[in-house]
Image (cartoon, rainbow, N blue to C red; front, side, top):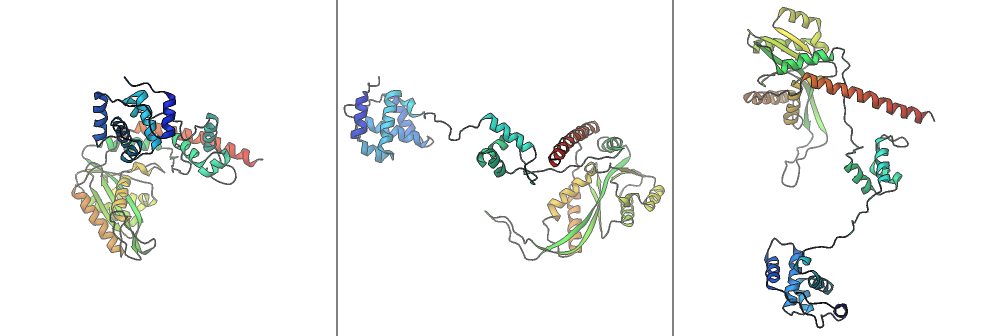
Length: 389
């Protein structure tokens, strides 16, 4: 049983710095529990010094000595002595609930910030900033940022898109996706394109390598040493790439690359080439050459839909892993680096896996078009109303 505590006695404690006529008796179970808390290195420090206060009090240690050993002030000693006398050991492990440091906002303010963010900002600005929204709504910047975070709003960011207007979009998508997921027998499917105007860039000063706590460095300016164009044909089934660097990308270079593909592939197999609508791919000289080589079958992607061409993914890899952060003192140095990367890639090729069906792609594009039209009408309607005032 915990001894009864008289409020007058507690008042004397606060006035005189001692508990006159009050003793704390710690039972064996509570003592073992408090000693375990104080000895456990994983216990929170606030629990450790609270347990020490009670154990020292039970040992008749004075308040000043308890302050010194527990590293707290006398108000904390009195507070936790009182808590133990009222609630026992469990009271030492519980913190009183306190009101939130940040007051909650009303639903009206939150709704106002969200609706304003989704609309057009005043004046000649193109998008909302946190400070502009805070000024208009009369709240702090941190409040605005919290609301934007909780609602997934990022007005400072924008993503690009392009919807194809090709009248044969659906047919071309089904044709190309069919080659990816169900290629014809006794044939090779090649995704072909050019990565043009690759610059041989050299930095004006040597940079510093990366080390612990510091990123690698290079100068903001550079020297141009010319450009090259990478012609690449990705074997969809194996992941191997037939590549060739040329100074230009006219129909003459395209024909030269087609001859290289013809020589690098088995003669008895048909070749299905997926390419974009670049004019050089449809030049009369190219069409005449293709007519003399019937094993070549061209499949053109829809306009504004280069994402259908798998070789674009390979171009992204070589750009990120070899070209963008490379330093090249000449075009020959750049071309050598590109061809070495191709050799390394072809030593352990890995094909890309196409996961979307043609039907899923067409449904997604249809939804995007419908949403784009409706949003455009809504935005232009607001804009016309604004400028008509």
